[in-house]
Length: 420
Image (cartoon, rainbow, N blue to C red; front, side, top):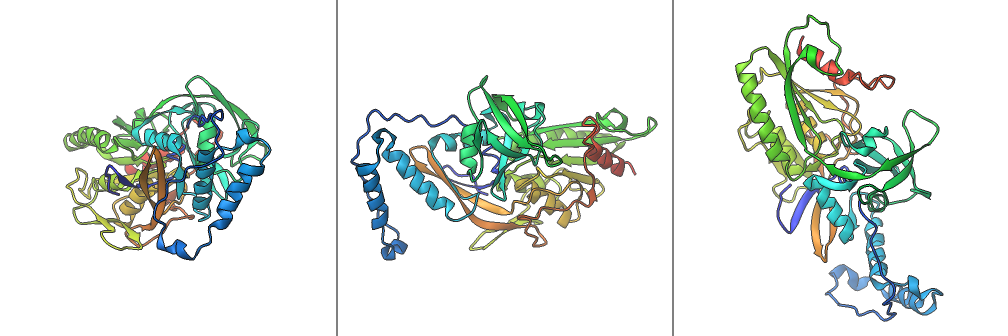
């Protein structure tokens, strides 16, 4: 995906979730006191496809609402227009193609920039149900027990049935210090649960890493006499600062791996990573693959839709064993990296099946602060796999121990596999 000022192509887990990491937003403030029933319309030339469409019903309904609706204070031209545009976009039935009014669009950008005010959970849509793609590490959502895959049945007293992602984000986000009550349903439960969450400023540093002795890794149980070290990097999203953060961490770890031969391998943790920029996914995958290797492709392919490695990575030596951790919160760009490393026989995947978001969005600012995200293509792994709705199956399936959250069985399996 190419980052440019006016136009950005974004791979979304909306997650859209980055909307959830999108990521929360304050409710749009609308003043009705200056209501005027007559609308001044600024015309733009209509697309050619509209020459055969009769738009008179639209204007007839508009006029009848203005003339006949009993509560004139409820009629607002801008809100009606926004609703019409939103409905037009929703008619495609694609949760990742969406119109974002100014507040939601700003929130989306804040999420990619790594800071926003809310509960710290990436949201998505599955079977028309608002779900949690992933709670952010250390966020208010994670602290109260929100998990990847949780269904959000209500926000406050409002049922989320048939909600859009922007609508969910709009309701859930809010100023620091305020609270919101969510009715959630855990995947392993049959009974909904009400959870009160106090919103906070969420700052997302997308990359963190370390090199440790296997016996010193928290949550991992290995024999006390186990010898060997492991390099580990946690990548939480592919946002505005990811490449810079990644480079800083990898430079340090690479130097340690060159000088310390007791390091047995490298773990890339993409669990609960909802995605982000396609260009950043290519950048990260390029750390492990030789120049010219295919990372991902787009379909349909009008032009320049095959993304290959174009830089010299620091961890391309095939003697370095690599394991990628994934789970149901790994979506979009994180699935691109996982698929590229596995298809090119550079890594094995450990954990649970990934989310399954295999489309690419083009994001455009429309002026006045609003934005439009349009799905423009499928993305395919190097072997031609489309993960949409299916996800990536891990090579080694390991689920977390629900009864003991402090025991990271997935990370433990990755560590033991490297030490073999």
